[in-house]
Length: 112
Image (cartoon, rainbow, N blue to C red):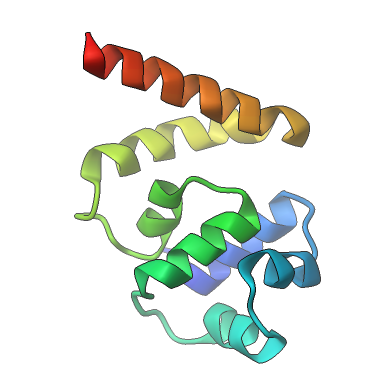
């Protein structure tokens, strides 16, 4: 299994983002970002995962799963794992709209 730092780097590269872009989006300094990416496996704080989600434009549930929080939101995690490969096939410019549409459908189904 890939550790959280490896997942961050893989996802960053897959999305065509630079480390500098991610650090800026996350509001982290270079030493803090480097420590996050290169540290031994650990479970980061929620605020750190939220910053990584912002930086990578990724759903928080997916970031939580990558960080090892399987029990935090099991259904979200399973769904994110199934949908991420499909979402990654979409052009980056379309991903926010697709995520918003999926969230809208899910909310409507919950309310029904």
